[in-house]
Length: 341
Image (cartoon, rainbow, N blue to C red; front, side, top):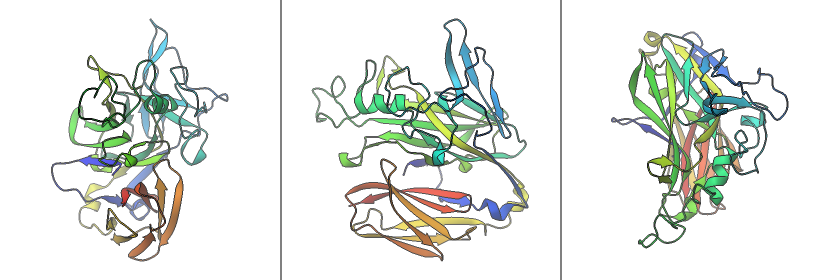
């Protein structure tokens, strides 16, 4: 799966049907489209001044001694999916924001988002993708970082064949409440070369939804980047990522506890599959669900509507490898990783 929920107990992959909870939840979506920018620019004050949406405050850090953006987040409409290197800090491989929107946000390692709706605030989720800077570095290598999978200088002289080094680039999302670190976290794989079958290796180039509701009630979340390409304790891969559609919800917890009728569990089987998969929905959905299948590069492969409790998808004509299955119902999204044998 692209999302790994770090819990000591067994987790059921669920999404809350927000539309059905209108009486007990306040959902706020920050899509950043209200910010004003000149074309091809970014939020870039020369002081450490955060920016704010209706549901959150986004940290921004500026180093006045060396005159550069040193940490946190910056919103942007600088579209560049091609140029490699440090000169392209704001471009994303997906070119624009989620669903081709005009403005998205670029973040750095250890960036912090503070929620403004308290108490009992949950970060429901957001979309995430790779910046062009990070993507190009992993795909081709650069003056500081190696090409992912390359064993030169890392696995040389070992049993790892050239081009098969098990690299990864991931973001760990952690939550805090009243300054205390929460037990649960969510891990997002932005690149994964750890598969036994190298054809399944990928570097994320499209927007993927991250469900962070499992972290629970928070007053802030923080993003921690990890990479296998390191030297002297420092990450060589550019520690940048991008997000869009940041969504929070404030819930009446007592109203939610008595009934779980608004929770849907999605089961997909068999997985891995040779020919077809069955998609079972347990629970209630806000609307008939749409199942969307994309390849590792984010290209739409096929889609189908699940109007009842179960649906099917034919994989017989697809090539071997992995795909992402996104189940969309109203405002809810669940992403599962599908392997085609």
